[in-house]
Image (cartoon, rainbow over all chains, first blue to last red; front, side, top):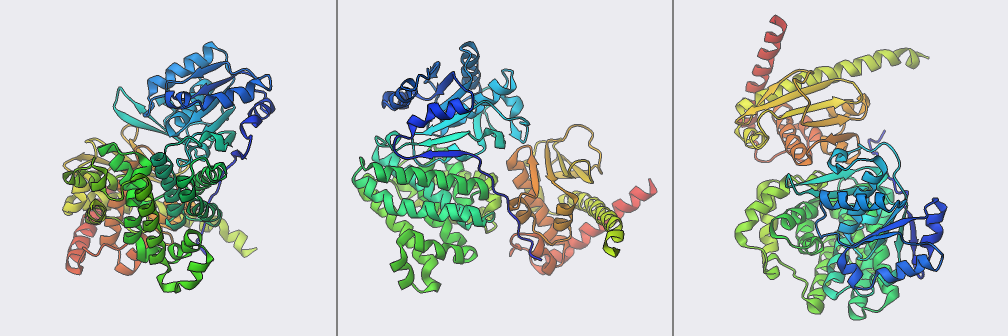
Length: 395
Length: 181
């Protein structure tokens, strides 16, 4: 009997496409929610992205009771506490997070406090602490990359202790993720590129790392195909709303894939680089992806070769000998990175970022070895291995 | 019918095996931290007094070790002197048996959601590396390859034999001391 085993869980209702925002009132009403609070950041508000959300609700007679628009890029326990107190004061009964990873994570953490009670979010840190469903929670992503709208994790900084608190529970999953192309139409080119590469990395690692499973594989391959087919056309024509929707869906699908099959060394190195050099997560993913695939190559030759079909299409796939498909997949990713560099100068090496010093590589390697995602990398990684990958990614 | 009759015996045997393996592993963890510098390099990053537990949920067999400083580990049996800092928990005795009988690698068990981590994940990653190194030393290579993700190329046969002998000797000594006490 085979020892193969997997788990797959995604109860999030995905509401995607044209006029998706206009479904929010109906969906909230279905959960008996009448007094929603919006959690977002100043950038989202300044970009005018709240207006269609508010208009969609008001047209259906649903009042947005409160808007908190001061979520910082790295959300903290005090911000969560402040928002929870506003929520209680205004007698809200549901949360709509509008934004990227930080606003969504903050929304998840606020939902814990307002549902479970108290002011100390740290009390709920860890895995499986929550035992009850939380208040109605909707997510409207404004970037196409993190996949946070379908993950059961939130990370909040405890600024007093200087540590990042992880929260993991299936109850953190939103009731609905609203994917509307209007929300990503105005994303600047370099963010479009970096976040799409984030989604591509989620999907690629989900498909090649140790916890891959048939269901997450289906989401991962579909996400790779969408990114490969739409990213460059959106870069050339940013107002292409169909292309934007494809990228947003790819991000959600990649999120579903990786939250059920985890990620590997690209994320370990990316998390460490983000922490030490303060580079954006999506950029780190784009930087490391081909080098880590090369490192893992002999352990992932079969699935990586399969990805060529989704990266380059059936013609290239069938014209490439089976024994060369894995290398061809890596070349396709390198080609995509070159194309993005031409269009928006998205760095391809650590040196090109101008924000990483060569003498920081040792610290990055050391920190990466303790990152949780390294457990799911198909190859064991030593300090020397991590350094070798970093040196290749350097220049 | 026979299978049904044998079921309680099999469950009991499986539980006893897991208990025994935890006893051996706990003592071996203490021993490897005394004989292997690479292990101490890993464990010395843990806070002094750090308590690590491996347990079968909900109240099954467990092992508890403490970092007493300078990378040295101390086996506490199955009773912690205070709340543990890090717990790796098997969801069921059957999952612990799969891992401890080398039918499933520790890394695969994590990937298969057989185990939960309660505590700082970075310390769990570090302790998993220590467990892998221990298994690479004390198990014959063919079995160790079934237990760890990748058998370390850096461990050469003479080093493996000498270290394994020293670890087993220390484990046996500890068992004798426990029986005498």
